[in-house]
Image (cartoon, rainbow, N blue to C red; front, side, top):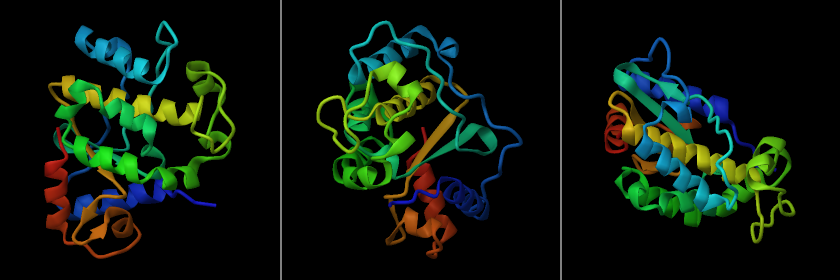
Length: 212
């Protein structure tokens, strides 16, 4: 079984970013909530939901907190194996998503890394749960993406997209998305988080390229 070490990887990234000169924030910004979005941002969230579901109206949405928060409004989302699949690709194919600095790279990850997503998330609560089924209906057979597929994967893609929207419409929030599949210093970021060596300046450069 594929094991995703979410907490350990996020902590390792935080340590590396501190070594690269970033300062951890005393408290992160609140998680995205639709009532804090302006009208245009709400329209984009409706587009996101419509790309994943035919249900109307849009149900209550409650994305989780940001992964890491640093000074000057910088928040970092560390996207691991479960974030790259056909559903996330749908959210990135909306016209406004082309403004995201990770857009092109993430579409490639979604196309090439879905097998790893299946290995990590074709079972149990990683495939479906009551919250995601209330949004997207009953799941398909575990591991079968044709047809109804995975409600939990769709929910994760939706919530990632909501964070993208919030960052595009915020005057203070600066979102950086990093993936375990990103190549940095000749190795993947996932390998770096597992202990491979990396020059701090290379991480700083990647963060700069990936920040809204």
